Image 1 (tube, one colour):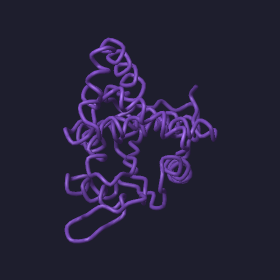
Image 2 (tube, helix red, strand yellow):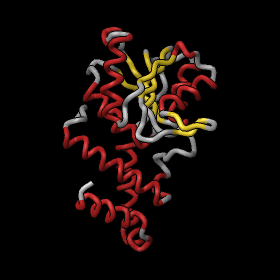
Image 3 (tube, one colour):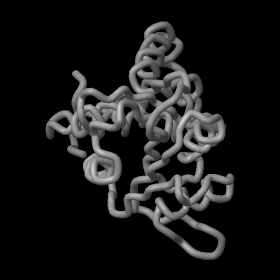
Image 4 (tube, helix red, strand yellow):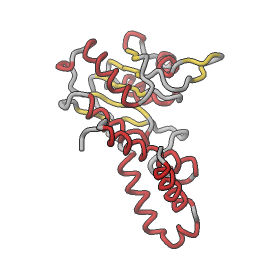
Length: 218
């Protein structure tokens, strides 16, 4: 992140947290928060899809929407993508993100035959580039009409835009964020400094992806 980006993020974060600013700009801040929430936190109603792609993260909850779709009879195939920049703790060892998420799905009763894994992605762009290759090899893009994308709520906009850049345009995408209390949600993210920091970092990530040409759908 550039010095300018850091300065801008710090200034906006200060505005969101400072009670004096909120007293003066309460209405504007409320509008700003709502606009950020509408932009980042996108969610579609669950429905039948050909595949659910789970984005890797060092958090077990990312796979929960896929488990729900499978157990509801709305999907037959799940792909988990991501080695991750961090490993996650599974029992007494630390494992790649795909391994921890796969184990959570298996523990929930999802058969191993229903789970496809992509084992090398370390960021969002790689999630979609690498999964595109595997999906085409396994199913063929002509045989896929709809994909659900499961991941963190604040990550849904960038995930959708990156999918539009690297996946075929005919796909119907259903965004399926996690809903647990441990994940930042659209109506509460500004309640903590950590939440504000993560949301502003996500906005900066979208700007960075845009400058590199790594997002589509706009």
